[in-house]
Image (cartoon, rainbow, N blue to C red; front, side, top):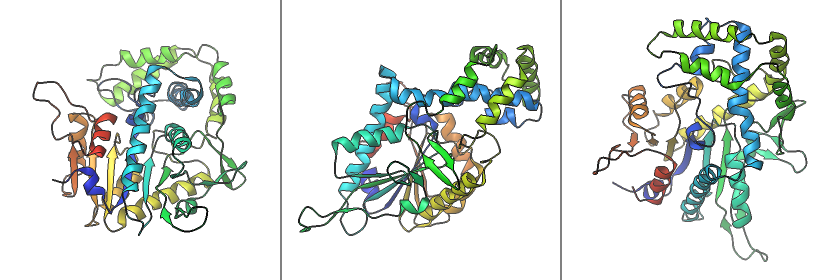
Length: 378
């Protein structure tokens, strides 16, 4: 069988990246071993509207707020590990693109549901080191940067000072399918604002809420028995939240501002604003178009397909006879779940082929594993 770099040669290259890519810097949305998902709880019908708002306050404080701080203020080993993996990944993709001919754009697309800025900060660092590459987040402008999916369809070339040659510049497009902490509505446009503590006002509101503590809600989830039904667990979560005696007026103030963040929450809703909603569906169409192109390859990493729209588009795209899909799963359990979900499709290859080494130690489909695939070492 060909190595992954050989398989990607001459192809339309796409990646679909999920939250596991940023582990352990940002934890995945796991509430506890065997427990239902956050989406299951807030969609269960057993939790009051006020307590659902408290759960989103917990979600914001535990998962979203840390994303704006780590990009500017962290320099510990965990941060270096994750950013190092991202940097290696992007450089490997650029290397693969650089070996392509100049007869067509040297382009790869990264579709991600992550809100964080790991790709953007990696792009920024590599741009300082490698002048012959181009990264595109879909925005245009200088002081005022605005988003438009039409901005992705650019061919970038380099011709030298005297225009005596022309070569295609390796280009990576970044499609943030579930929004970003850097997006903000401005009239009928979406602005991209890269600055420290972009959610500072919302942080202040959360800090001022009396008696709210992430650890108190962590303890409630830790007390739940995963062997019980969702209905029972949601009722116990409702009771636990009520016992915290939190001030509902304060959480209402939080929620008014929280709803303005242009992200898709882990539940059944999408964006609550027409401008963001339209952009989301444009991104979904872009994903569909890329999957329908001839000789496309999609590499899926750290992604569970919780987004029903993306899942539906992906399944329809699998009818493209020239589409090849590579799925990298972290462990055997997550791999088996996807194998069951996509049973009947014969153009998907799953990695790792085995989760055990000859010496009995385990293999995980982590970022290092993905990067070794891109090196052609697996």
